Amino acid sequence: MPMSDAAELVLQAKSRAVLGKRVKQLRRSGLVPGNVYGRGQESRAIQADLTEIQRVFGEVDRNAVVSMSIDGASETVPVVLREVQRHPVTRRLLHLDFYQVDLTRAIHSECRLVLTGESEAVSMGGTVVQSLEALMLEALPATMPSVIEVDISVLEDFGHSVLVRDLELPEGVTVLTDGAVAVATALAPRVTEEEEEAEELAAEEALAEAAEGEEEGGEEEEE
Image: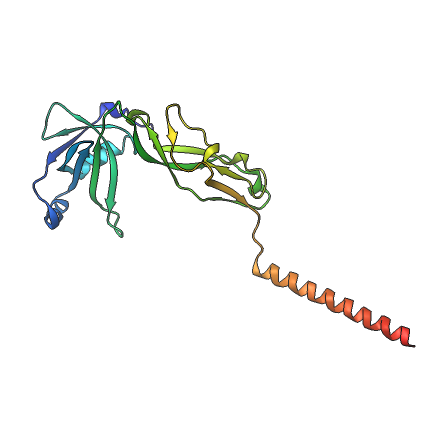
């Protein structure tokens, strides 16, 4: 399903007076507590309906700039979803942090890395291991990507890697992660324990046969 234009969506939130452990009461009634903060601004406690959050963030990318209306105000503020807290077992939303952005000032944020394409190393019995799941980027809020695709078709042999510096980034986006870090690597087929034991047994038998041959040769010389 194609993502909607974030500019068309407005997240409706309300000021939150319930703080501390009492926020459990909010969650029971279908509300999610959160905070909005920004550069040079004090943090503001808010709350929003779970269905409202699902409506908006089910339509836009993770790093999209969303307009937020607080207490029904006609003037909205641009925010990005900075942190999501979930219950470790049920994965239920517990708390959201929003960052109020200046659309003319670059921000730092993480984006996911997704492997695409097919590696020749896999067709030869190897595997591709992803060692980096996300990148730290710098970009204007409106151009900050949520996902960067990593083409693994360039991994043509075992031991080949795609490094951070090899990635193609959108215009205006700067990577802050070390360029020498490996994103994905093609590994050779792993030798199983059975194969290792068979190889060791074959080597021992070869050594034994060689030793027997030397002994037989020595006996013939003595005769």
